Length: 211
Image 1 (cartoon, one colour):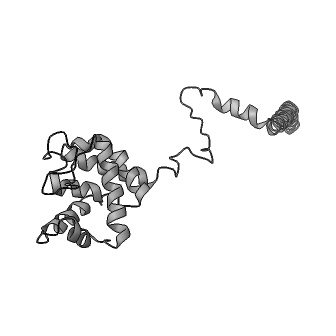
Image 2 (cartoon, helix red, strand yellow):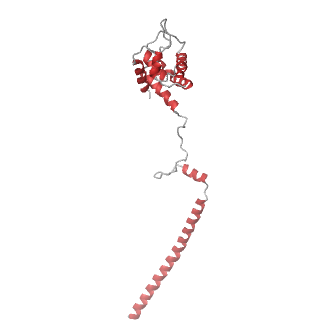
Image 3 (cartoon, one colour):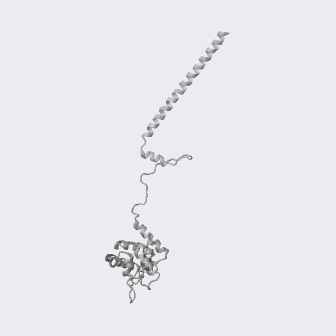
């Protein structure tokens, strides 16, 4: 009986070992082939050109997947040319718009004339506010919003708002600033010498509203 049992056990061990050997010989080659295929794929991927990789990223990914690309180094933006000059024009434009002034369309000219004659860009607008409520109270067809050249026989007139802006700005530079009237109070002493100080107070206030 013992010899029969031993024979059965030996037969069982033989077939068990045989099966393990067959399984090993089957799996090992598959593992080796899979590893070699992976190495070849990675090698090909590393040789892909930047242009080809860009084309791959440009394709639509299957549903459920997202393709991420790094942001460009140079982002589009507003150039440094959007300078304070542009902001000054907008300040004047908004101020004139708030008072429904006829000068609204001339904000660019007001600032460019101020730059040309080296005058504070707010000054002529502030004077116009003080003298004529920004051109709403002026002699008919005079285009004189600044009380410029007023005398006992009448007041100076211009042919257009453009002419008025240029003439007044140039006159302030030539007859006031270059002659030492370089504060609102000093300008008042010549511009409207009979004022009790309210003219300078008003012009200063209007200029501060355009800061």
